[in-house]
Length: 256
Image (cartoon, rainbow, N blue to C red; front, top):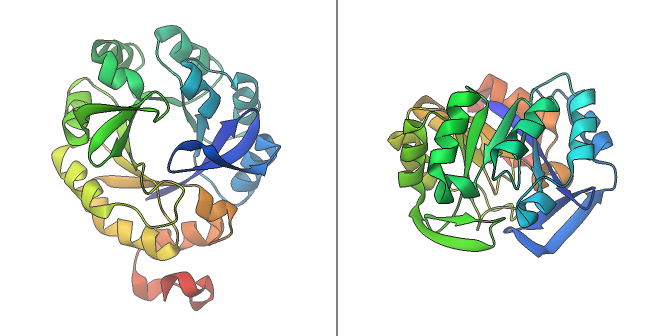
C-alpha cells in the first residue's frame, strides 16, 4: 500500500483544514517546496497536492508552487483543486504533473471526465469527497444529492485510472478513516481506491491493509504527519511489512 503525504496549498503556504472548512485552516509551513523535499527525504514514493485556492476559484491558482515541487520531485506528483476544464488539466500535465484529480466536474460534467480519460489515459483520477455518503463539490462548499458509490461506479465506466475517497467529516480530525465506507466503495468498483481523511496513527494504516485485497491500495496522510503523530519513514516501514506481529516495538504507542 502506498503512503502518500499530502501538501495542501493555500495562498502559497502549506496548510491543513479541519473538515474542509477554510475558516479552520492551520499553517504548517510557509515553504511548500521544503515540505515536499522533507517527505521525499523520508522515502515518499508519491506526493499528493491540493490547490485549495483553485478549488474555490474553479481554476488552478498555485501553479508556480506546483511546478517548483514537480521540478524537485523524482517521484510522481498528483494534483487536484479547481480542475474544471480541459485547459486546466492540460496546463498541469504540461508542468510535469503525473496525474490530475477531478472532483466537481465528475458530478457536473461527467462527459468531460470521460473525454479527458480517453485523451489522457492513466492520468485522470477522480476525487470523491462525501458527507454522509453524498458527494460534496466546489471545494467542499456545496453538497449534491449524488451518492458516492454511484459516482465511483460511473467514473470507472468512463475510464478513470483510480478513485480517491475522502470522508469530509473525518478529514483533518485525526479520528481514523471511515473503513466501512471504504470497504463498501472498494467492493463496488474494480479500479484502485485511495483512502483519504482522518488517518491518525500507524494502527489506522495497518487497519487499512485489511482492505487492500478489496482494492484499497493507497492512503493519503496529512495532519498526522504534520503534528508528528508518526513519521513517514515509520509508516512506510510498518505498512511495507503489513503484519501486526512484524511491527518493530520502537514504532511507539500508535500500534499498541
